[in-house]
Length: 67
Image 1 (cartoon, one colour):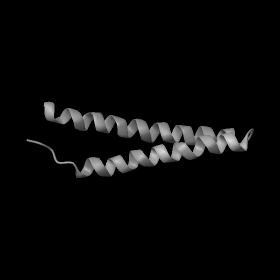
Image 2: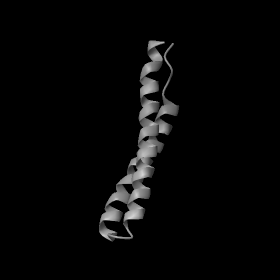
Image 3: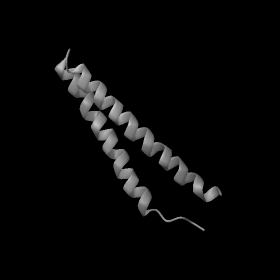
């Protein structure tokens, strides 16, 4: 049971990064109505964070489960 804890922690971070990044992206797009530079300054890092979460899904799929 102790061997699954690092995988569970990684999975938690994956979803936090994906949902947090998408939220920041949408917030940035909504902000572009009032301030274009600030909106894109929020949206681009949001997409980058979400993509890091997607890459971590691939990394998690390649990890071996220890017996």
